[in-house]
Image (cartoon, rainbow, N blue to C red; front, top):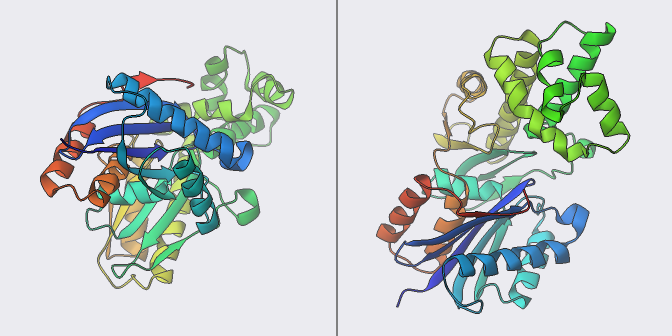
Length: 333
């Protein structure tokens, strides 16, 4: 009988968990809240992941204590080695799998888009992060603590910049923009000023602004100069991260895969990836950027299968299934 494995891609806004077997059959794909141990604590985060695993077994029609051989957990906001070890220890205590692998979520994107397991990966979802792995195994990453470590990017940053630009357009500090008309309706309010006041007074959680990011991308695609500037700024930040990692790993003179994943990069809009490609062609011409064509959870599941010793045919089978389907159970979104 085939063994069970779990692959988890935990982002800031949502977590995808795939339950599969070592023959590459997808048994369940469930979705829950994001992984935010920096805000909620590691205990709450790992407890929620364990609950999500039990829900996956229920969806698959398996008992709650069904044995899982390997769990591959690729988690946002788990950025330091000490945090990875802490998460692994707590997940092991909770019995989520006989063997637990914990990595930052950027490495799920790398595993999903660079089958040899090395290169540079960028995740731009609600937040932003990047990591690089040398062919010989050496890695590089960023401290990634937000504004205090110079980070800017991801859907929430795009949304906040769009809202701010729309307010500035109304009070005379900035140029006119279609964002003044496009953004308020998302919250059923009459003006961007009303949205800003609602956020300031706690009526709209800051994290809820993430929902404005698709509207900024749509305005940029429609030719709005201000929205385009915000999207291109995100592209510049991504290029800065990629080139910094290539330089630190001494890969600027080596053909290197660069995998772009996350909601703001896998949203179907071409402006951002085209800008990234153009900038990298000038600054790191041997870099090979590509937008990930499967959900990042495919990388987490692939790592779990690889660790479990599953054959390449099983890994390909599961990847193809994940590419052609979606979560069957969602909760807490």
